[in-house]
Image 1 (cartoon, rainbow, N blue to C red):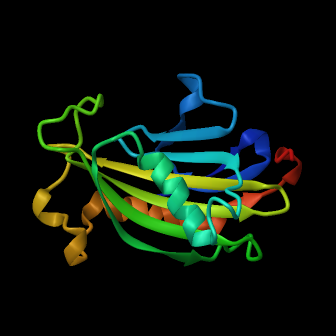
Image 2: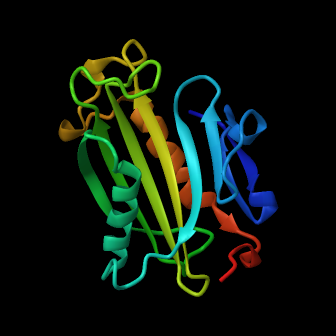
Length: 193
């Protein structure tokens, strides 16, 4: 079982427990001010916290549509085969009154296409969490991205259509669950209308 460490995000305005082996990417490269990016120091998995403008009612008629809108934004610009395995409402343990939603999807690049990543993954698991902060006119999008590169996993252990996630996807789902349990907003003034 992975160990988790409490981390401050956005200068302490938020806190969350992340896998202990994850490091803040901003210590090695520039990250946009509206994002926090954490990377597994022993692999390719990343966790991204992205503060975005709230998707309005004209663009998305429901919170579920807003989640699909954000996912489409993440997945756009590629010819990847995308499959959504699960999607629905969720509960944030420390923020019970804020609407939250989760999605589990996979993206598979077309055969023979280089993605710019080295090495190119066979597919990437995406575990998304959306928090809708209506009064702050903000959506907080959290993604756990789990690339599956050749030689890094056993292909026979992974088949989401059969409920077989394998160790990497299970670790990503465990990280998402820990985020649901521990994520907390300490300072709402971070969100400027």
